[in-house]
Image (tube, rainbow, N blue to C red; front, side, top):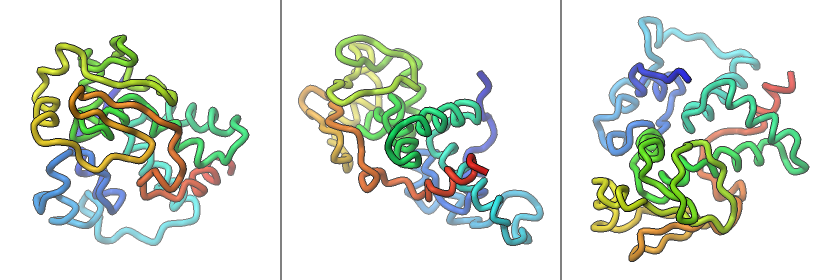
Length: 207
């Protein structure tokens, strides 16, 4: 599978907002979105007003880039969500939010989803006591997430053990002594702090 190798800060500038792709750097004044709040490229400041299609496209691209998902995989998630009986946009967000790499990030094992994906790929994470190295693994309520024996030696996990956890979503719980997280339920829309208008994405694929 291909992967994006260019500067990820360009993606944030293209969407006109922080997507928190660089971990700790995104929380400092060094963030390029602070320093150059215009789209990348020599014509960035002269971009014209977006069409209705362009608005929907940008919303889709924003969500796809936040979770680090490629186009084909993102479309597959949308098709799964569309087959669900609930609200398609909310179900799409739930599918993305309950990916293993995202949950590892939410639990604080990593400072970005990219770093979380790398931890999973390198075999540092286990689900219900079994090592899983697939970042797109779909978690279910009741699943227990923890670092493997090798994962406990990872610098980020050691830092988490020493400094404690940042703000945790209400659909997850964390045992600091055992460095173990648990998924309590599927997240409701108000529990997903992703700044997107998911209905625009539904409209994009329904055109």
